[in-house]
Image 1: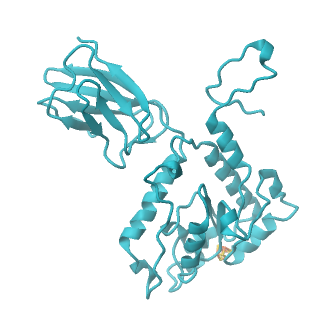
Image 2 (image 1 turned 135 degrees about the vertical axis):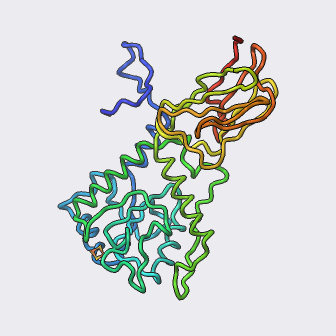
Image 3 (image 1 turned 135 degrees about the horizontal axis):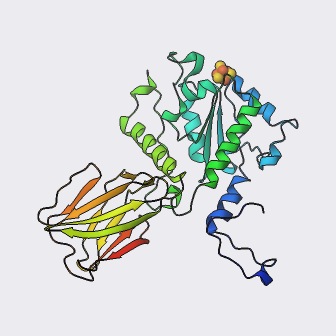
Length: 317
Ligand code: SF4
């Protein structure tokens, strides 16, 4: 295996040929990356290019994707290849809901992505991503088989960056069912709450596709009556929904707001104390009580799964 997993520990030289150290994420991602099974499903002219991609000339077996299955129960990759009509979007969402997690969607061609030449047509939806979470978009009308292969490779790269710690489908509160669109006189009159839910699932999956951020409590200080914890992200973007800051002494908890994302190399300051105030847009107010006044007081940063990511003990000033 040519690729060296990040964070691999060193192995004594005399046993190096017998021992392979890697991470759970690396094994998990490698398994999924090279065994994606697409559904044999097509909607219009783009489907012809998808069929051609499956021929010997393009050799899908290289990617472990040649097992194209006719049942959604056996697939984990849905390729939306062609024009999505308002009548057809309902069975498409039903098929997606019948696939097991983890599952992925490629939007192939201009029609699937935005309506294409039929955009604003009376019977065509202007983008499948209003109804399903899309992982990769392949442009073109139609995209060539080479473009679709590039889409497959992009999806593989995305999967390789995922982590079992952050993927949404192992979270208790995650519901993988996408709301069914309602086919009426105009499909866009369907339930706005359902549309919002699709957007939220999209966002959750997008954040999970990024490598987990590396968050640490960089500083715990107090200036007169304002006490402040600085959390710094030295990794990639991190969705902090459900993350908490816990005061070790008082067992008081601050929960980060839903949708709060800490960008790479950014900081968030969480203030407490009677005079606590937010001075910048990245500042958060915890409480108007003193949290850390004494030497030995501790702050702990806990992720959405309850793992303690970082702790900091106040040493006094
Ligand atoms: S994007 Fe072009 S080739 Fe693909 S389904 Fe639409 S019209 Fe046909």
